[in-house]
Length: 120
Image (cartoon, rainbow, N blue to C red; front, side, top):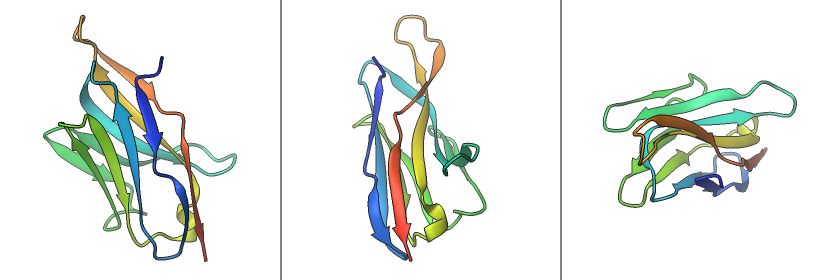
């Protein structure tokens, strides 16, 4: 069973906003998380990354428009997307490093993907 589930995709017009959520099973602690996107047959592209309690990084194409965050109380990763553009249209994937509660090792997991469509 995949311990994280994405939601929040949809269709908006240029300039609109969406917030993507990646809910992580309460069994796991989030060490770090990223959002990637994939457009058609293109390679998956890193959009934003967060090291919990430390730093964030963004692709140049989304800086100033997207914000990645983690709500530790809800064990959820968010991607707030503002001023959306047609070129942001893609399937967005959550990727998280989760601490195994038994071994304390950090394992990587992927979400199922959620479609974001931005019309002109």
